[in-house]
Image (cartoon, rainbow, N blue to C red):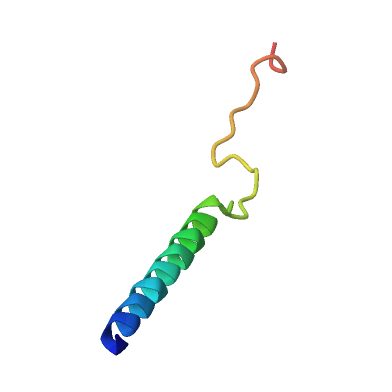
Length: 50
């Protein structure tokens, strides 16, 4: 009975760790990075020249 209890606790602990790791990865993937909203390439408008 002692080995059965140890195996069950090990399985439960592994399941809890796997669930926590998966939730952590999902939280990291949903995090939006801080990026400035500045375009890398800008074009002059042709309306001003005419």
